Length: 41
Image (cartoon, rainbow, N blue to C red):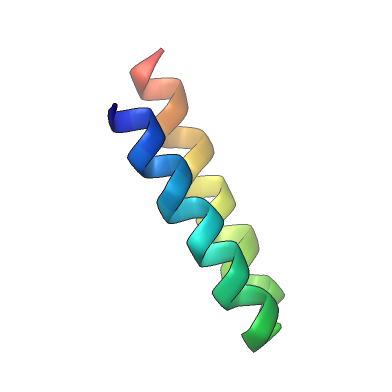
């Protein structure tokens, strides 16, 4: 359930990021998500 909410937040963030076109934020956020997923595994 936690993973699903994270995925939903990620997808929402991607939509917002595409509108803002701020690639630096997208890269940073994606990196944080990757670290969180590694901790869960």
